[in-house]
Image (tube, rainbow, N blue to C red; front, top):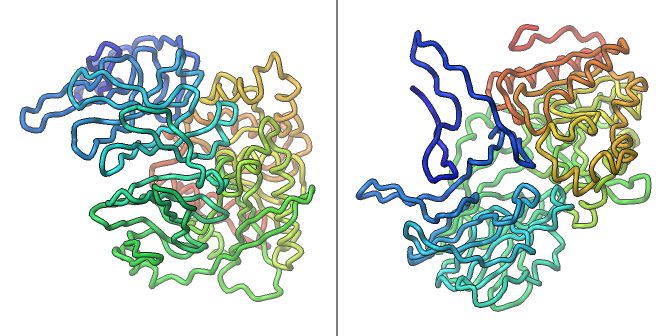
Length: 541
């Protein structure tokens, strides 16, 4: 028998999913799924049941004994040992109804079974679920604070500090607040004199340092740079880093430079000829400056006009940065210019920029995206008669907006999106966003009808569109693609729907990832390349 186990509300264990019966055994009829929570779905986890929680356990290596750290019936996450091993800091949500307030708080407990946890951050301070970071002397804990629930999907992480004994309330670090940028991965230096962290900036993620006793934030590396996954030990620091033409490798941070430690991709890269990616900036309709990245096709000749693909990032709270993108490189190797626009609602440009689209989806983002396409046409790079668009998740949602408002696009791919947000109330995992950002449909129907523009105005779409999605996606359920596919099929617009069996929001199976990329290329080639013949896919259809 094969099963996964999860802690139950009683402190015991239960199967997380159905066991696979022995060969030849008759499968048992599954029990009905009983739902009574406000938020009852989560992509990857499935249905969220009231008696299931994630607890922190202590495992004694010598005795093989497994015991719970605390006795509460609430979710716990991100345990972090104190330097002396006597205490554990962790994140937990003790709100009256955690489903209605996703923010966690920082707790600390003695490192023994049945310990009584002590709350260090108040319910009023939303905390991210990242791991709390101890100072080397064990006196302080650094953590990341979020924002109030109505800004949850656009939140920037803020650096906060709190005494580990709880002698005073946590405070936001003023020097980092002045940056107006999201932070991640705070780490104390070995001597405890400084905190290092990563700053999400315009098309970059750079390492920075701040002395604990005061001062301003010191930027450790200039842009363009993207680092992630830092690890600090015994005075040494390593990170993952890459760029537009090089996948991530492990580097040692030495002052303001990186020294490469691993070379996993050198052999492959030696065989490839990859085009560069350049930065572009332009004005949106209302005068807002918008930034993006442009990758021209391999062997591009100045002055020639080529087919352009507008590939839209998801989120919306994210950005296209100077990182290696297999997708951009594959498209460029096949004769396409690829434009990535960091539209409003995304990260890296400050809080006002990310909050701009709240409860007004598909408006400012579309204006920013349109301005980017117009800019590349004006550069003389894009052929205005051969424009394509596409994206995944929120990138697909915006793709649906684009094709419903601009008939210039001759081909589109829309993966894990929706053009009819009203129908997703109660069927996806974003119930708090609907209720707190927009309001329930019976109170904000006009807003829901406005943001359902692509589906309700599908008769304006002329673009042949490929829709894709995971069969078990609870993030943006595949019904979103099904509805748009059905609308275009009813309107006799060229369209196709691809559903990947047993996949959730992010397609994981390598064969499906390859299939998706091949289908993208085949679809774009069919409509954007003159005289193109059908390109075979891994599935052969």
